Length: 233
Image (cartoon, rainbow, N blue to C red):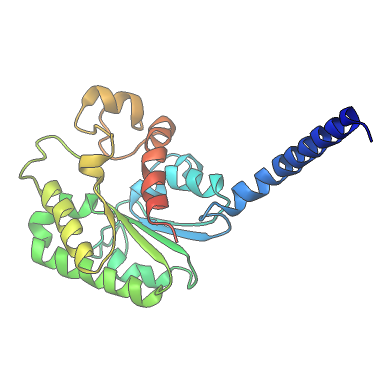
């Protein structure tokens, strides 16, 4: 075998190895995704139910679809973490028991409605019921990764009931070892701005202070995705 023939054969082997490696990349990339094939349940208020727009527009639905996850939505408009309301149903501190028994990821998105009623609920009761929710979720899902998301920031946030609820969530969940995403301070969702809300919140008029539209969910998706992946198992 001549030198040129050996050289061509060597080059061919390299090309075949590169092609074989390239063919394996999609499968490898998929197997490297820690969320793929896992199940996720999301419980919360209208942040989860998405108020008057389709659930399919929400960042958590899109996160599950992107990563090939089984998705369960337990959102209920007007729902509180800590109290039962005749119109808006049983609080999350009890309602979590109705979720499916097997989940890999549990996301809790709430606190907005508790903050709106905090003067009547009281911070002590809110913290106690939040603790009951944390303990109950851990007991029900000992193998799952449980993550909480606070409400957005609001106008005059400093010293407000919204801030008290957000800080209580950080403190109480932290006592149970549950990671919390501080959406009031770290989300990039500037809910105190009328102009921002007119672009990214439902209704388009800037009056809605709670519910993202599809564009807003797309904006928050990479932020939330990064947090979930940070705590992926």
